[in-house]
Image (tube, rainbow, N blue to C red; front, top):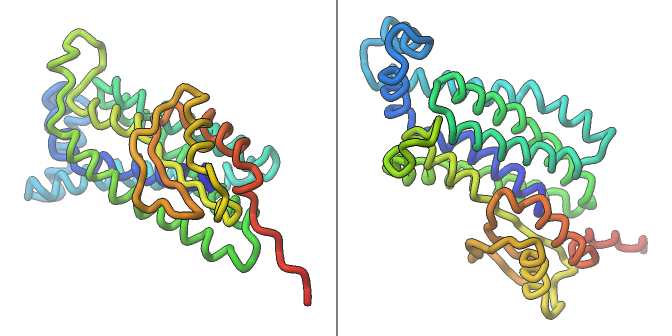
Length: 274
């Protein structure tokens, strides 16, 4: 469940982290590229549809959000079909890497075209939410499937909460002042950097109950990959551990932890018929 939870969490963070930045984003790109640029003409066209400035920003945000969601919708069956043939885990790890790449592109999106490219990449990779749902169905017995889907829903909800909060916090962090000579760095690079550096893992299994040393083994596996735990959630319990690590370290950390706790994280066997 750790990889599945991380997948949907990052999908929703990537979708929603940009929301608080829309007003500044539209003004900055229009000023940077001019009224005759694509984004300048887009803003002028939106102003012909509505007179209120706030409504223009809402429409601009709706277009960028729809671009992400539309590609997520289109690519969900594509990633799902690939995961049927190549395996859930390998495709999930591939799409998570692509999500991290979209944040890198956004970090250097000094032009509106690169911002669009970042949203395109993020939306395409976010289609992996179909694989996450399939993975839950594959790995949970019928009696536990609703619980697994509930954890999946929690990851989606948490991503929607964390994303806008990160965007709001990063809105005042302008990296152009500290990195003035770095090509592509823009006033919104801080939000991309924060989103890139955040991955939340949730380990859950009935085999963890009553087993001593689970936390020590988990964090030793994390440390073996040279990664640091940034935060541990209070949601952790006797049969689950929830923690945050840097996104680039997520794929090797997931493999190391799942190998270390293979028995404890395995689904409980179905009861023998009476």
